[in-house]
Length: 331
Ligand code: HEM
Ligand code: MG
Image 1 (cartoon, rainbow, N blue to C red):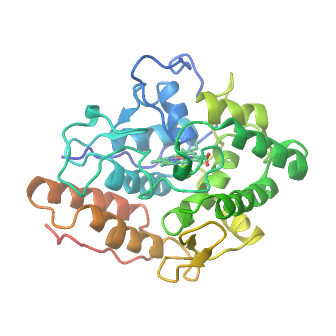
Image 2: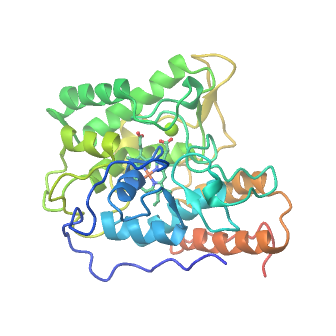
């Protein structure tokens, strides 16, 4: 029975979140971290269980309390990830690699492999993590971070800002097209890549700061060390994907993938894209294709858990006028 996630925060003001109750601690043996600097940081400050295994309800609570992430986005991202990477029977998700700590395997083709799992949520062209093709899609990559600093110097006077976000996103896409023969940039990655380009601006900048300029030493703390600056205040008011459209508009590209070799980016007109605005195309294809490919014929407790988690996932787009879909029937 999946735990019920919290609703919106009552008090969304900026406040100290690197506080006495949530000190940064180095990893203990066995602690798991993964490709998301936001969740890594929440775990290393004890807003999430420090071992890196959490229920989706705990994740929604932590991203709201720790970073002021807006409630529907928190639902959408958390339940999207849990549906494809989590163990639906035990209600546990690894924020990194696969582990027995999330419980016994569901039947194949389900993976329940944690956020490191390639292609169902995690994908190519990440800013500070290499493409899966190169062998490690989840650890901090110094070469990539150095490139991010270079872009901050070139386009942002040393800071990461919206202009840098647009230029660096494009650079990461072009770099993957040129070097990764398996490069894929279709839904859901087509959407999450743009969202993640603005998350550092919306969540890693101190809530008392209003200039939209992320210091690169602060950025390194989050991306590399899962660490908030001393005295860090969360955003002042909820944040979601503000800036997304600007990053897209800086260098538009249609969904596609390299076919068989590098520099062979072929468009995929079957992927959800921005021709229909908003998250409904992403929602629909994620449920009908990504989730169903992992759970073709679920029964019993598994089917019931899927349906509950799909309901929470839909709550993440409710209000955007999407039509809810029920691939496994209704209870
Ligand atoms: C990347 C999951 C919330 C910041 C990722 C990735 C996953 C993920 C799977 C890897 C995608 C990839 O780059 O290939 C989640 C889930 C969340 C969540 C399930 C639950 C709400 C947050 C929050 C923040 C954040 C609250 C910021 C405080 C980022 C950033 C990246 C990222 C900046 C891109 C890393 C990079 O490109 O190097 N997230 N995330 N995420 N996440 Fe999260
Ligand atoms: Mg990635």
